[in-house]
Length: 249
Image (cartoon, rainbow, N blue to C red; front, side):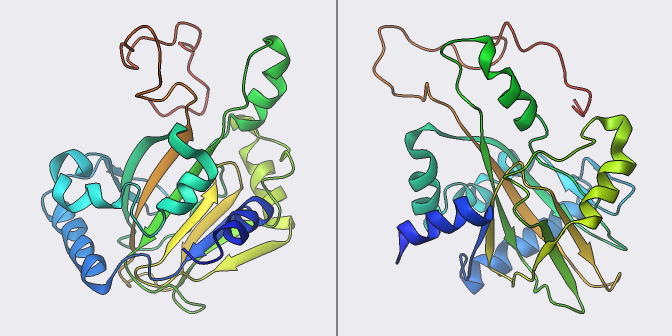
């Protein structure tokens, strides 16, 4: 990747970058068709109130189609440049917006600021952080659809993060300065998980879909030199059993 260090600096400074033509036209069309196939098959987990239909099982159902998006060569230099071998795939989710769509303002990693405050509770604790990569399969545009960020929203702690204060949080986000992106089919937007953002469609009948990979920094990565073998993740976090109020389970 040309100018990698500059791209990494931009990601840290702005909180997001766009990798244009991250997927070839052939890759883009193939995945677009398979997401639509998943809808035809009824594989979605649900359709929420803001118009977002989501699919959590596609990586397992069709690994030949979806696994190449995980650490895709077009974005791998950025993931490695930011997280190195501590980069771990946290989740894989596809979306379709089948009708009207105005996403609520939100953070993907609501707990970032809470964990930052808790760093003083242990001498060896490390600030958790994550990165989102979103691949788009149709063109966005001023008259079609967009992705909107709160400018510099990853650098300041937003007020009203408690779930009961959501209307106040939404109002705060609306009142801030915004940066609006119009990614094209095949583009990938990479952003830091705790920046407030919002997606939307301006024409309710157009087709819009994407695939989101969430990555997190995990210091004890697989393959690290250690005297014992890891047991995996299930049930191995004894102090993290309490669910956050925003956890959807």
